[in-house]
Figure (cartoon, one colour):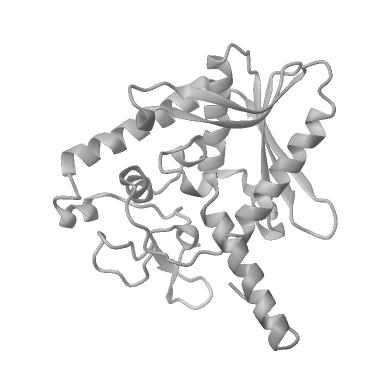
Length: 263
């Protein structure tokens, strides 16, 4: 968090506003969610998913919420845009869908689907990104996590009685001019089912290893070179005790030859 003012009073006001933003973001329903959601199922890091399933205490005490705040605001604005154009019921907007029912609240997988177009059978998901990230998604595709999320919501719409034909991720850059990139492909139920099978394997490993009772077994839970460590609540650089935090994944830097944390 960075807060500055033109004088002492401005500094105090800036600090207060920044603290209010952080506090509101940390206590939002999205931040307080403890069970896995469709946006997380495809996360490449199985260790992060395990921490999440356990509702393990976060190692990172101070996280910057501004990207999440802006993303939430953008989702709300898009909801209003399509609601105003939905006089014929063409769109399902920000509706909860059940990807897979469970025996308990925590075993049920459900989430809010950004937009479903009944006319084209398209599942849409909005992503507000930085410009450099948008360029990466444009060149390399959305990555496994976002792709999985799209198909999971497709399965959720199918479970709701719809007939999804295509999934689409709409990337909009935070920039001074409008930049939009859309990745899309045919809906594939098997992508969603494979992701659910992987989630079940990770959950079963928790029961088998019981790392809460055997902290040394955290080391048997793998991470991934594709992990986005910089944004992980359980990142604790230099940690040698995985029960209090993960040191993150490192790889040689192409520029310096030294190891650097994967972001």
